[in-house]
Image (cartoon, one colour):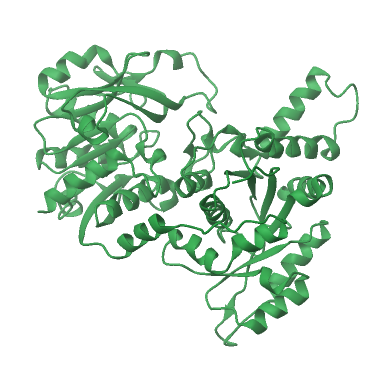
Length: 538
């Protein structure tokens, strides 16, 4: 593959939010990678938070964490799962981080006394962030998804910045606009007017889209495509149909069928005759759609009303389940709804495994602890992630080691048995944003443990997002009682993994294995957990 100057592709959205700009960007990236190009994808978020790290998941869904410790939008998870490449802090830009940088420069006098304005200072910083990835010379394509909907006040500086980049970089840029072609059942027809108005709004900002991707419930016939092309001033071949799909993993194949990648390359005047090979992706889809067995795993969390709060966990179940030719049915359970007695027996009846999800704060904690007690006593496979692991430690301390008041100091600062305590280097921190233990850290595994068998290696690296940890003062008591520390971070002397060796499969991890799971490389820990659940089903 010959090296080409970096090309910048901008993906905007119109008509309505949640049309799937991130999935379209990831699908295009997948197709270009299948041709041998080096691709990365960036998200521009128009909110004033520096990052989503301090947001309630109900506000913004899951907070995704990159290897280098950035707390980012959940779309970066899609980028990594589709492309199989790691993202970084440079892949997520927010209005808050832009303004913070510009204001810090102003305070230092970098602008030499000039009036600091949206144009040029804010737009210049946006352009610098966009080109940061391209300037590394690692990528042939930088795909930039602009959050929000065209016409939003919050998005205007981003739209203006990319308009300027079009003028500056000329033929190295391309604009894809994702829009909606709704079907009105009363009229019995698809309507193109929302798309026309959306493109008109974009034109008013000085941007002519090169390609339109049209989300639709029904196929677009030639007449409709011709009409959209005529009134939106694009080629008919550049009107791309994006039908609703059963799974997001079908979208790359749908976009390939619509020749999205070919249209992109032609418009950027890149000649490439490479035969796109998506055989492994197709094999994954076949297995996904034709499972040979089925299991039910209960997911206990406090944010289950918004499933996107646990997006990476859900996708990890899909990846690992498909690898095992198994459909993973998730039974969503609110931690607050679990109480002792009949209710918990009813809620957790007929499950093959339990995952207790991460989170913060004391709401729902006792429900999580009761769920863990149930599966421990009934020898049902268990996986606890971050707070889920900490709850398993608390439950074991209370009900096996007879430390009745055992707790985390996050929940009860005056507990007699602080089996989970704040990390030493977190004790003096007062700011909440970006101050946790974040990013990838190493972990040494104990041979013959479930974790070792899953990863099949002595040392792993996984991503973290936490302030509290296992209190090593109690480690000997736990190991004497049968809960073993089978994974440790030697540099910081932190317990990373706990297991109960006498149990069928009982593992709690301080890190987040779901962040590193991809379509073609499922998380080893999730794969091992699902294996245990399948065996439990037998």
